[in-house]
Image 1 (cartoon, rainbow, N blue to C red):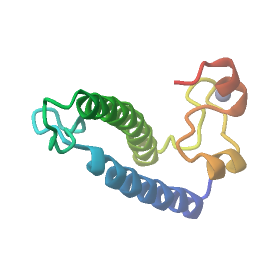
Image 2 (cartoon, helix red, strand yellow):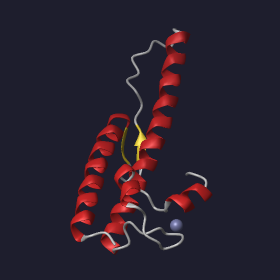
Image 3 (cartoon, rainbow, N blue to C red):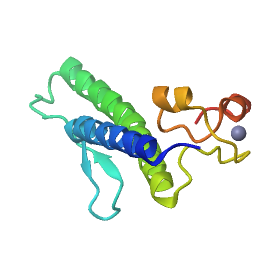
Length: 126
Ligand SMILES: [Zn+2]
């Protein structure tokens, strides 16, 4: 069983992760005011002359990259939030499939872990 101190330690780590991820997210997206917790991609500065087709294509490409990045960051942020919720509920560090403890080494490497190594292997990564 994880000690209170250990859980506090992981909680602090998760909060740092969260801040970092939110910082990265705010560079490509802004919080969606209609749907709390969700983000929408911001459009890069459009100083593009429409007559220049190449530049316009670059802008579209950049927009796609931003959206992919934003999606990944948002997923990451959600897994952090979920882990923080488990801290509050007292289920942090417990595999949500087999209810066994997740090893400390695994949590150290990936504090957002929701499953033990065995179940994570059986489950496709999302
Ligand atoms: Zn398990």
